[in-house]
Structure formats: structure tokens, C-alpha cells
Image (tube, rainbow, N blue to C red):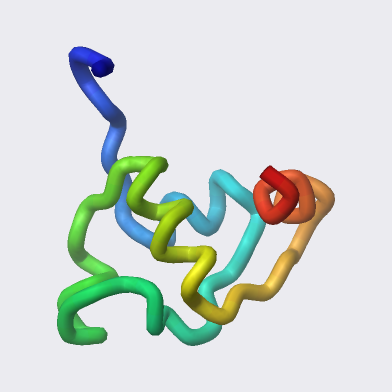
Length: 66
């Protein structure tokens, strides 16, 4: 296990990964609260797979593939 795992908001992960979460149904909690919560990359990937996402860049395609 890592000593420290970096946590970011959904918007920060979207920018870093080159995707856009269109419908965050994979994230738990009230919609008004999930955008302020911090997620590790592992949790973000898991939740994003269950959500509707739009790919914006080549980097986004790489995120979707693995």
C-alpha cells in the first residue's frame, strides 16, 4: 500500500485524464456533494467506469483503454 495517495476532485481528475463526466451515476452521494469530495485515482477510475463519460483527447482514450 502506498504511504500517500493523491486525492483530487472530479473536475481535477477530468482535466488530468482528458475526459468529461457527463452523468456521474457511478459516484455515490448527493450530486451537489460529489463534486466537492476528494477521490483517489483508483476510486475515480472505478466510479468513472460506471458513469457516462465523454472523451475529449487522445489522453482520454488511453484512460478508457486501461
